[in-house]
Image 1 (tube, one colour):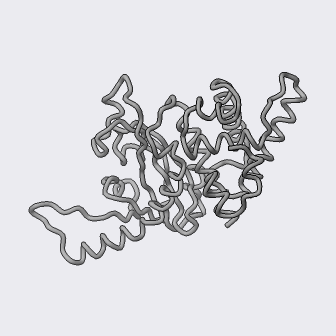
Image 2: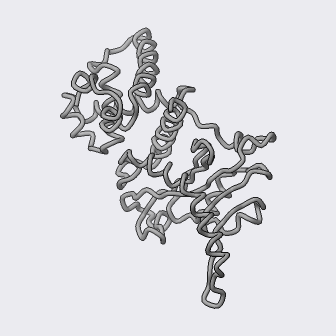
Image 3: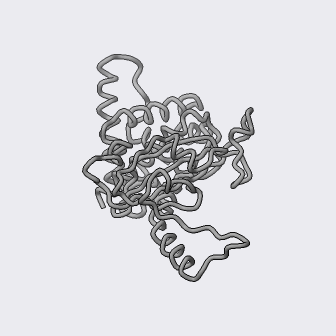
Amino acid sequence: MRFDSVKELKGEVFRRLTGIQRNTFEAMAAVLSDAKCKQKAAGGKPNTLSVENQLLMVLEYWREYRTYFHIGQAYGISESAAYRNIKWCENTLAKSKSFRLPGRKAVAASDRAFDVVLIDATETPIERPKKQRRYYSGKKKRHTLKTQLVVEKSTRRILCIAHEKGRRHDFRLFKRSKVRLHPETKAVVDSGYQGLQRVHANTAMPKKRSKKNPLAATDKARNRATSSERVPCENVIAMLKRFKIIADRYRNRRRRFGLRFFLIAAIYNMELKVA
């Protein structure tokens, strides 16, 4: 897949192929072009691929999660060259101010910037690590990396993310992420965040039943209402997992996983502004 063969595609067809909209692609290409001009001024061997082809290579890697070898063969370069090109694009985009999340400080703003936030965690399978116990998720019954998302309900914008090993409990991940919610901001979470009510009083969470204490009809109705309120966060996670690199088993070094998830989340936010 080269840019010459897909540049005529527009609208939903382009998004289905690359995972992003055409105007987002052009914004990302502009950031890479500026960085490439500065790189040329500093000297060095010129890259044989255009900026558009380099960016298309990155999106193909994220979207389909093919190996560096297969992508290199498709673009007529070596496996190591494919890795260097993808790494350069990711690092350049991560340094740009255009691809940033609001962050934890925005969530804890003193003027109560958000009325309702949704908090949920998702897990990405990984290959079996050397220290297996730290990454083994009892919920998924496999080794995973866990990512927590804080989403604004009204706009469905991702505010901040945090990463941990799959063994880490959801509520403990929340405490380690150091997210501080405004007292008047309502937090809607699932039952994995038992204990959050003691930290943040304005929390909506499903009530759990037990053998001796079954749920009453009013409790069931309240649980259904809370679950319905959490649906937008699930939809956001599904949108991010269009990119198979965070949906399928992650094969790369784990230290780069956070950067890639951060970039995909920032691209998602950028497309929300355009929509």
